[in-house]
Length: 135
Image (cartoon, rainbow, N blue to C red; front, side, top):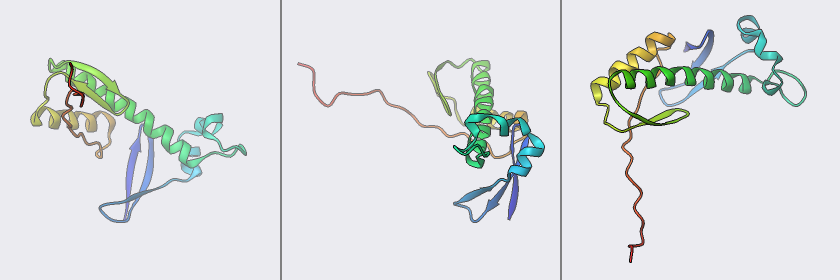
């Protein structure tokens, strides 16, 4: 089963093998048609000078991820929450966000990027505690 996945303004095809694994099917032709400028960037080429599919996909994903994290940060701040740190695909907040806010932010992410696959997860971090007691 094929599915479209939108990276910014590039639509890539995904081949869905099952619910646990997804493989990207990308052709240089689709990138040539939609973003030919990417194929000229030296850091997206192989050592031989050919366009690298994996580097192009990574580049597109990382840029889209950055854009969507900007949406997340702005939404969190707009709800009066404090962003303590941004870590490429995550943010650390001072306050708990809650299920309703996470759901609202997910919908905003999807609406602003046109990508229905974005998902948020939450992980509570605990302060580091030394195994050695202080004297």
